[in-house]
Image (cartoon, rainbow, N blue to C red; front, top):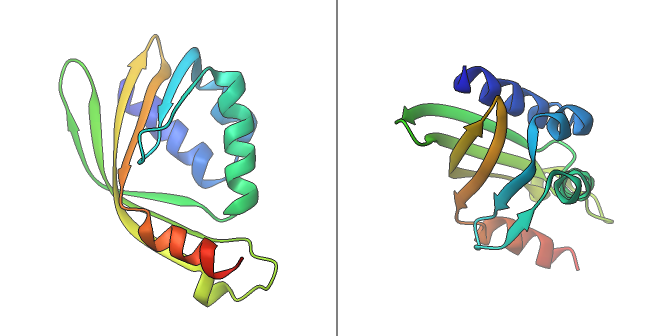
Length: 130
């Protein structure tokens, strides 16, 4: 069951379906980004995802491996996207990086979504477009 919920969440992210993402998160959802920043609550995350997709409209997650125990699930794979820059050059603004996610599902909804990735390539692209 937990993997089905996660699959739906990933599908929602990969299609930028904000409403579906929102509906798959617990009210007290906890998001932790790769730099340790924490955002609590599905309402906050609805805005967070909206803002993120405005920066990276084609953001995608590819999963290569899944590890699971009784407490949480870990997914390994890649994150990719293209920075939505003022001076567009999609080839130069596209990135794909190895990433992993720690996920906790409670009562059929995503309680925790924690990202592990080296975002230096993404930050370099953003800074080059300033």
